[in-house]
Image 1 (cartoon, rainbow, N blue to C red):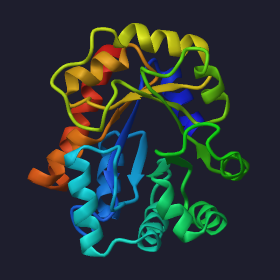
Image 2 (image 1 turned 45 degrees about the vertical axis):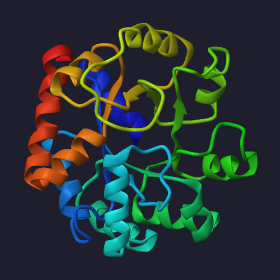
Image 3 (image 1 turned 180 degrees about the vertical axis):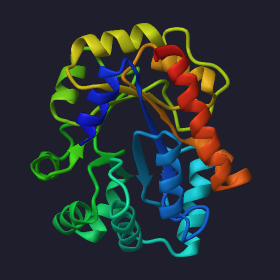
Length: 261
């Protein structure tokens, strides 16, 4: 379903919009209405983060959302229950984004089976580099879930095709190194980096980390297959709630379509 979504947007001459939110944030019962609002506002793929107590790859905004979600009582099981409810109402693809620890505690086989049953379409394990755990990677690859892979500016060029070949759905290109977080400017070299990655792989390439405005989303949409926004969306959600978050997503979609539509 994820590949079909990217293909449909490409056929329209548009980039896909991927939005990240933390399950159980800003309130334990907000996940389903939030996902529905974002999908209605123009999000093509929804990344749903499983809150974790030690999110080392995340900046302060997403860390705060994870900690508050955990304090409110969010669990993997409650997240999957919310996903099941959302899936009964919407076909918008959902990628579960998490660290290894929650999956291992749940049990890998049980997690994969329950995630598929709940309606997940993909899985992004932020601390599982390609080749780090071949047995676990094979289990995910053999499941119905797309295994979303990460490529960074520091990834060796000759390794990029191997990383992409081990994944499916789309390739997540980090627009910069470091942790997640909104930034006021994009790096000057990003367009050339994305071009090289797209030339080297067959998967759609979506760019994330630091995209925070409709103008930046438009810049990325002109060079990539997808735009990923997380921290900036969480920030709006923290400050102004679900309706404002949906308006922000609509503005991102408009900014992207102004360039690619």
